[in-house]
Image (cartoon, rainbow, N blue to C red):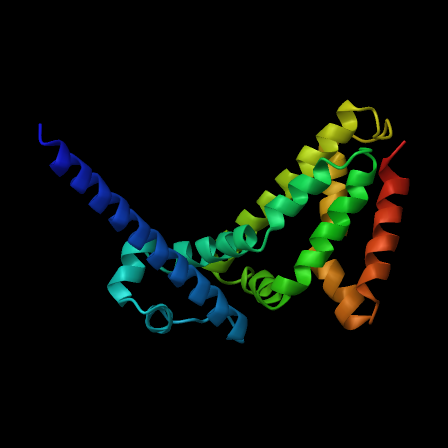
Length: 209
C-alpha cells in the first residue's frame, strides 16, 4: 500500500468536505439575510445563489429545493444565534427554580434577533406548506427544550401537584410564544425587561410549588 497516496487522498477528501461545508454555510447565511429583507418570504433560488457566490445547481445539490432550504435556514439561524446553547445553560441553572426565569430571559432576548422572519413565517404557515414545515419544526424544537426543563423541575419536586411536566411545558410554550412578545413589546410598547420580569413571575406563581 502506498502510504503517501493514502495520506494525499485523505487530505484531499478533508479539503473537499471543508469546501462543501463552507459553501453550505454561505448559502444558509445568505438565505437568512434575504429572508430578513423579504416582505413575504418569496426569495428566489437564483438570488440566493448569486449572494452566496454559487450556482443555482449548487443550491439544489445541497438542499434539494425551497422547502428544505427554508427549514435548514431557520435551523441554521437558531444554531449560529446561540439559541440552543442559551436554553441549555438556562435549564442547568442552579438553584433549579431559577431556571424558569432564565429560560424566559434567554428566549425573549433571542426573539428580537429573529422577529421579522418569525412574524412572516408564522403568517405564511397558514397558506404555504414550506413555511408551515419550517414553523412547525422550530416550534416543536422549542417545546422539546421547554419539556426538558419541566421534566427536571418535576423530578426535583418543584412543580405544583396539578401540573405534569407535559402540561407545564404546554403552558410555558403558550405564554412565551413569539406572538406574545410582539403583542406586548411591538404593539403595546412594553419594555422588554418588564415583559421578562412579569412573565417569569407569572409562570413561577402558576407552576412552582
